[in-house]
Length: 609
Ligand code: F6R
Image 1 (cartoon, helix red, strand yellow):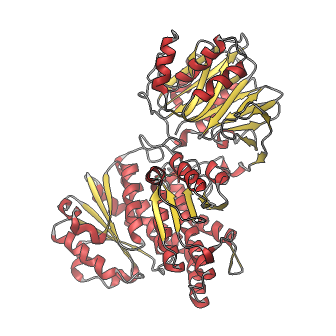
Image 2 (cartoon, helix red, strand yellow):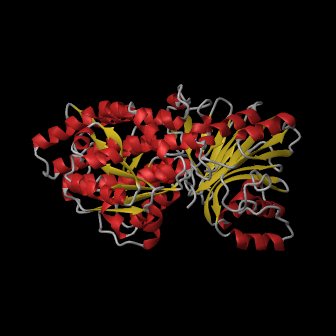
Image 3 (cartoon, protein in one colour):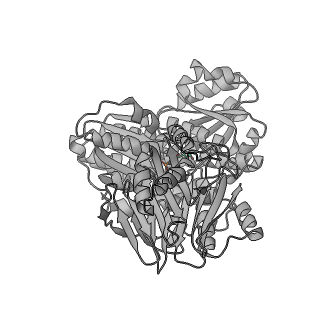
């Protein structure tokens, strides 16, 4: 989603901002822009629609004047189309602003601004911000006072970078409900919505708290809280050395990240298992009577797999909810309940808001995340890192693998503490997990089957994914992966639900992907569902393990297109079955020539609700 990067103190300011914006490209955006403060204390702005390359070309043709202060933005359109006019920075008179988030009361503010004779040029909510600041400046306030007067008027979520011609040697930043950090360099001070943007420049960061205002000059960083008091915030050292991501010889980041999955599982086992003893941060599992798991998108599907783990291995009832539904339903929560927020980025606005709701209602908060410095991690009582490393492709793959692996360990830990698993079963589960990296590597090497099956989607407009038990969430995830990167409409369903509606879609054009494992006792039922599809001339695809494949009757074996995975016990079946679903989506997308790593309209980190 939108990204911010800015700095003061380097003669190379514009280029540093441009490179920072490139680092944020993976988050998804549709236009970009840069503002710089020239030596003459005047702000200049350039903006372009499309990839950063378009902005770079524009800057090559029409460079910004030399500057030691600049700020830039990648915009993911919310209010107003993706045009150069609507792109950030937005400027009113002497004030320029870059903004992540949404100003919810912008209509009301527009009327007030119009009444004060300021004409807004764009369709955006953002333009109201520099206008409000300019109005405050007009009342002869200092720059800081103008910000302190204007910012409380804003409703919604925002992270802002601000430059003012009235105060040309200072860069301002603030945030509420959207992330923003300050980077500390050698004589250079930075702002960024994601530390990754500054990976080449610093590893020292201050994360702003709600309503903080950061005042950056070349030699000083001063922070004020929402009450106007000067405050200090901790400086955190973040190791970004491994993060300067490259494709490492793969055609796409997504492909590279799928191939990193065995390593992700190994990282998790190394972090949370020592001499066959689980070392996850201990929770009060013996006393927990229920769990709420909240997340969005792929992370939500990981939560559905997690529900299976906690229910089957530890006998704890689990509710899993989409964060955007949970947060507005005002659900009653049992006091001292456990609330688990899952988020790769740790910045998803709805998940964060659901977490805040749970916190207000006395829940114990556990964050399962790939970003331990994120807003969600910082708001949690306990953090479980999924150790997937930076995920660049918009379509989540290795983070999903990390999430479901962590849930398997969490289920085992809870089951052990609650005495629901005997030591023999525990050891068998651990053994399966230890063998998982090798099984994933084996599955990843099965590419011929994935590419061959992808061909069945060449002319498809729609596809169905069916699964039961722990493979049901995978059917949902398989459908999501396919639709987000290939733009083919796809639905995931519980196999048993097919007869209750989706079967009407089946004809000779519809690929139906069935997931069936020999480890869960549900194989026969899934085979029956497949036969129903076959009888209606659907294109039957079966992802199954080698043992199950051998037991298929001759008819199915002849007509279905088979992808086989290694046979594994139920605890690791979701991980192994994930791989062909990802690979299938990937190969269909490359066959159709879509932008695999940055699919249209999508953002990596969804920081607006
Ligand atoms: C799908 C995908 C999204 C995210 C969702 C939540 O491939 O990536 O559905 O899973 O936006 O994101 P996080 O996990 O960052 O909260």
